[in-house]
Each structure stands twice: as structure tokens, then as C-alpha cells.
Image 1 (cartoon, one colour):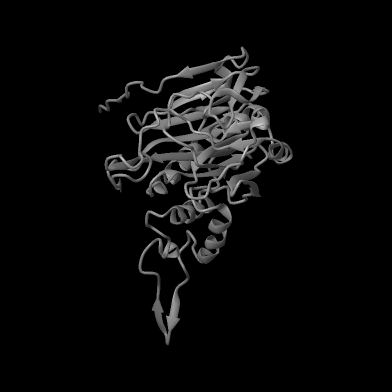
Image 2 (spheres, helix red, strand yellow):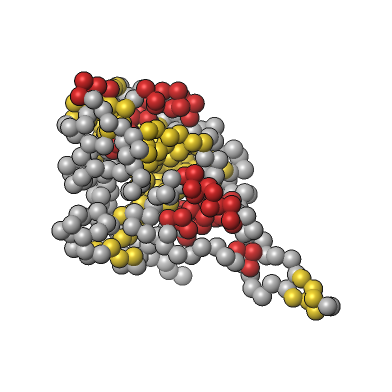
Length: 354
């Protein structure tokens, strides 16, 4: 069941992954055996050069304070083993992942809204950088309840990540093994945590706006509308899919939120992706390269699916759509270090013959 469900969520996210700059999309689905899978796509206008990462239990992680220097912030020792993907060669800059206790989540771009906390110099050692936030949470907590209780005591700074070329404006979605989902957003220097029963997450604007806008699409349904009769004349739906007429199909993050919400709500319940390069252009000087950057385009760099019940984390990349998987049962979870695994394996092609 879980394999079928993982395939389903991958297809659903692929359908929802046509979007704007950094238009990542994520949601989770529940299977008929009580299992849940969480998936997300990563759309970005510059290569993140992600690698698969295992943070072993007992690993000392040195946080970055406002200066951005490793060790100038809060240091902690991982309570739980974590698997996921890093970015720009920084091993504790996890952009999505899952821990051994089944907590999964991801960082998504939050440009225009993310404003992290102003950390006084004498409190630098109580803070972590925005790009370390997911690694901090997954290596320390196993439930949404724990995150709500503990995260307010940690300050999150907006320090520059040199390998990225600037600050990292993100917000975070978390899903625990009990099916709870939590949005974490830092706006105007304040922490905002909001339960997210939809499980859907995209990019800017903030989640409350997305939820308000979603109310405008309560009429959408996977089933076709009923036939209507006018003065004895039967007028059936003209086409399959008529129940979804009005589903946004443009490149806005808000439209992707609605698309992912409808896809996930109408996904099959009896089950135990990618954006082609060049389809969404980023003008020169815009996006993520700064004022001197050249025109570029966005692509779906990868799709991932976390399966807490079976302890697997599956990855597809743009260059290689073969599924690569990490399994907690196959990995050395203790040892106090961070293990990195490349994603540059050659694609395997199966030749079919009669």
C-alpha cells in the first residue's frame, strides 16, 4: 500500500509542480492502513547541488549565529537520526528530511515575508540560522507538540549563508507520525506557528492568506456535477472533469496551493513529476542571482517522498528520474557524524523485449 501511495503522491505533486520562481509544492496523504507519506517538489532558479545526508544520533551540530559563522550560535547534539537532502554543500542546511521517529518536513521559499529575529550579540549562542532550522527540529523533536513547546525558546537569525550568496528566506512545514501538521513562519521578527490540517504548503504568501483564499474553491470536486434539466431539456456535464472546472492553472504560488489541496483531498483512499526546463523564465537581475545575474529559468530539481511507517525516504532528480532511496533499517544510525551520499548515479534503462 505504502509504495502505491508514494507513487500517487509523486504523481499528484508532479501535477501541481508547474509554478513560479521557487514554486515548491508539498502535501501529505493517508493510506488505508493508517500510514502516511509526505512529498514535495523543489523548484528553483539555480542549482542547489543537493546531496543525500544522514545525521547520525549523537552528532554535535554547531549552529551559526547572526555572523553566519559555524559555532557562533547554538550548538546541540542530535537526539534522533535524520535522513534528508542538503543544499549548496552545507551538510546541516537541510531543505527537507525525516527523522527516525517519523517527523518529516521541509523548508520552502518565503521571499518578501520572511523576517527573522534580531539576536543581540550577547545571545548569539542561543540562536540558529534560518537554513539550520529544519535540521535543528528534526534532530531534536518527534512530535508537533514538542515543537510547539520548545521552539519559542530558540532564536532564529537571518544570517547570510555564503555558499548560497545571501540570506535564506524560508518558512517550514512539519508533519509528525500522528498525522499532525504545523506551519512555522517568521514574520516581522516574530515566530508564527499555525496548525495546518490541510497538510498543503507552497511558498509566499503566509499560510493564513492561503487558507482564506482556499474557501473560494469549496465547489470543486473530483466527481462531475449532477445533470440539470431546463424545461424538460437534460443538460449533462459536457466533459469528464467538469467538477474541477475553475481549478487555477496559472503559475502563482496561491494557485499551486489550491491545486495541491484539491489533488490531495481527492486522491484515492484505497491505495496501501516534473517541470521541464525553460517553462518558467526568470529575468536578468531577478530571482536568486542578485542584480548582476543573467536571465535563467526554473526547473523541478527533484521530488522526494517521506514514508514514516516504513522508514524510507525516496528521491527523484531532474537528471535521473530513477528512484533512489534511503532506509533507516539499512543505515548506521549511531556514530556521531554526518554522512553524505551523492545523487549523481547514472540512470538505469530497462529494455523491454517480447
